[in-house]
Amino acid sequence: MRLLLVAAGGLLAGSLAAAIAIAAHAEPAPKAANVPKSDPKTPLALANAALQAGEADKALSVLQSISQPATDLAEARNLQCRVEFTLEHWDAAVDQCRQAVNLEELNSNYRMWLGRALGEKANRANFLSAYSLAKRVRAEFEEAVRLNPRNTEALSDLGEFYFAAPGIVGGGAAKAEAIAAKLDNLDPPRAHQLRGRIAVEQRDYGTAEREFKQAIALDAHPAFPWVTLANFYRQRQRFAEMLSAVRSVLHAAERDKRAGVALYDAASVLIEAQREPELAAKMLENYLDGYTKTEEAPAFVAHTRLARLKLELGDQAAAAHEQAAALALAHEYKPAQDLTRLETKH
Image (cartoon, rainbow, N blue to C red):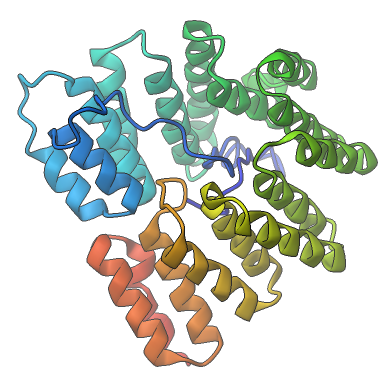
């Protein structure tokens, strides 16, 4: 899904088509399902395990076998929403998340995921549709926070919405700062990251840099906020500092096996910057080979990005291998399918 850093597009050039685009956090994945840990062989547990491993086809097969009268049907629909989300099937994700919310209206996480799916749909909609969708995104995030004021994932998403969205759809810097104040007591690193993003939006880049560095100092898993700082440097075209921050991600991840997503995200920063493709490829390879996979960095997306890098580096055989690996996990993932057309250009 995109560069895996939480991002929200603002009202650009008078267009609401980029009103809101919520992407996955560059942080450890939230709990995926309310599945009893004592029984890893239930359909929900199997589907969740497949989702985290990036086995989209397997996850969908398991979920689609769950019958209507089944218990935990709402959780099944939420899981299916999240699988469709990783596949970038935004309409299907919205439909499944809406079903989960309809079945269990008071679940904060279901509301949050519906907001995320609506945000991705809004980012690709026309002006009028995006305007309507953006208001629904805000409503779902606000309800998620109302239902569970300690849901730091939902608070972060709502804060991102507030600072990036125009006032006409309910955004505002003061609202975002109020969310950061709530995060101060729940998750200080998140609070600093949010304040850093608010400062970027306000073009106060010195404050933004200080906030991102403070998040690094406070986070028990510093590889993740290092990615945020690296991306900040990329956006400011401070490429030497960006590369230094990326290497700090590598060093932090060597000591933290929970930091695989950070390697994936740091590779995305390099790809976006069009710098160091060999290093980006190595980081993706490390993620795929040595770290626990999560839905925030789907394995089939990692294989697809790695295939693109291999093509860029002139290794068509390796690119074909990575493409095959991606399609074996998610045969309907269009970016992996499209690699065939890319290969003919090299």
